[in-house]
Image (cartoon, rainbow, N blue to C red):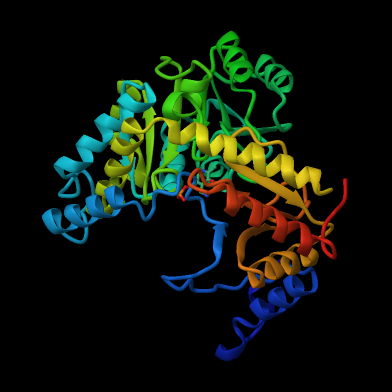
Length: 396
Ligand code: PMP
C-alpha cells in the first residue's frame, strides 16, 4: 500500500511491531509455527535428525583436532581472511579439500551459505543468465537474488528444459546451478546431463555438494567426482563442512582462476571474519579420517537404502535415496509435526520438513541415514516410525 506523506499512519512505539504478531498468528493457523528447542549434551534419543551423515561429529579424531586447533590458534580467527584471519590451518584445509574432491583449488568460508552467496555473486554479472533448479537450496536462491543477473527458475531435475532455456538466451554468459543431492528427498540431480547442456551452450556449471561430500563418489569425494565432473575447467562446486565433516564452515572448489577471483571480489569472503580455527581443525581431522577409512561413504549410502526399503515395506511413502537422506511423506504439516513429536517421545529424533522448507508443499519426516548406525538402531528407527505413523502417515 502506498501512503502519501500526509497519510502516513501514526503508530505508538509499542505497536510498531504489532504486525509481527499478526503474521505469527497466520503461520500458526497454517500449522507452520516453528520453535527452538535446545538439545541436551547427553540426549538419549537416537538421532536421525542431524546432518552428521558419517557420525563424525563426536569422533575423537575430529573433536581432538578441534581442541588442538583452538589451543594452538585461539578461539576465533581474529579478522577477515585477507587481514589476519588466515592461519596455516586454513591453507592446509584448502589444499587437502581441493585434492580430496579432485579440484585445482579451494577457498574456505565461514559457512556453506556464505560460500554459495560468494560463488553466485562473483561468477556472474548483469550480462549473465543463471539457470537455477526450482528445488535449489535457499542459499542458492539468495545468491541468485544478490547476483544482479537474470535468473530463470528451471523445472526440477529437467536437463532438457535447461537446454531449451540456454538455447534461447540473449546474455553473453550463463551459469547452470543445482544442488547435487536435494536435501528434502535425498535424490541426486542429473549432473552429467546438466554438464552436457552447459557445455553445449558455453555455460558454466555450479554444483552445491552440501549433501554429496563424504557420501557420494569414491571414498566420499563428492558428487562432482562421482559424475566425472571434478576438476573440469567450466565447473565449480560448493560444499559445507557442517554435514559429513562434522564441523562448521563451507568452501568453494574450482579452477585456480575462479578461486583467485573469489579472493579478490567475493563480498562474503572479504567482509566476513575467517572460519574459527577449531572448525578448520575439526574439518581437517574429519577429512583425514575419510581418506584413511574410505568405506564410511558407502556405508552411509547402504544405511539409506536399507532404511528406505524397510519403511516402504512397512507401507510408508519413503523416498528413493541417492545419498544419505530418506524422507517419509505426511499428509500435512500438522500431522508431520505430531508424527515427529511422537517419534521423539518413543526415543527417536527425526527432522520435520514443512512449507516453506519443502518446494513442492508436501510435508515430510526427514531421516539422516548416518553411516555409523548399527543394524539394531536401524531396526528400532523403522519400528518407531512405522508404529507412530499408524495415525499420522501418508500412505502410497
Ligand atoms: N546448501 C545446501 C544444499 C544445504 O543443505 C545447506 C545447509 N542446510 C547449505 C548449502 C548451507 O550450508 P551451511 O549450513 O554450512 O551454511
